[in-house]
Length: 196
Length: 213
Image (cartoon, rainbow over all chains, first blue to last red; front, side):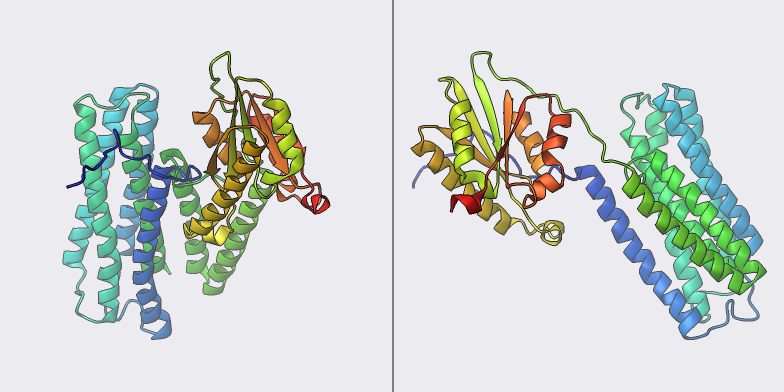
């Protein structure tokens, strides 16, 4: 059997240096998210505009006020998230911990309020097309909030264990970007589903 | 315009913008459906115009690149050329610069590609064509008694230079282009940008391939 020559190390990977790998990864991830939400919004517009379904279907009512309060809670959580990251960038560990805990609690409050509203809303996903679209869109967003809370929980635990510093805070920055996008998506969902 | 995907701070500012945008549409929409539509159109057009003007106004940031140097007794010359890589003026300039016995020459040919093919990561043909030109150029240099190394670089000549400088600490850079009016690189200000970006002497050689024929 012929001997096979092995190099001392694997060949250097060819990588275009024009786009940073982490940025490219985030681009691709957000692009997939937009496509996912886009498919749900397509159904929403089809049901509401093309099919002319009344929104909401009588006799149901959407909890606009409670959802509005929830929107304020979620937007506030973005401010606390931003505060947490700015704190660690200045070496303020207490600010980081307080910011992350507050963000997590505000996100949890949003999710629990949404679950509570689901139980009181009076219609179900199989009531009609309106119900399916409503639960589909808000449920999809709720699932994203759950993922965001999981990331925040990991970041919070790490912060209390003494991780992160003024130079090393990537583990807070990435969940922060994700959390802000979850908020942006909620603003789109709230405006289109509840308000307009 | 800030890229909302690059940092948490920019994502946060993007969120604030989204809050203002959707709040204005929602308030107008609640007052009157048509008012909501008008606000939506006005704001969307406004954002697009603002983004377009910001793109034109903001010059591309010039980052000074630290250039590592080779051993003191060695003269390193980095040559960036593409279609003009085999041109006589370029060969004679390299010969002149590399007359020193301790000269080392690295020739980089950027793999020029169309934007669409670049986005689709369809770079094989561009790299093969660049490799072809490079091989011919290295052969021409060898005929003139210059032993040079070569590599295919990024399609953006500035990026190709920066990539090469990271592994080949050049003492000077030679950029070869077509004459003014026919050179895409000159139109894009590649030579000027290179002079701003790299703290080493930059030589610009013009090769008129049509005149050579």
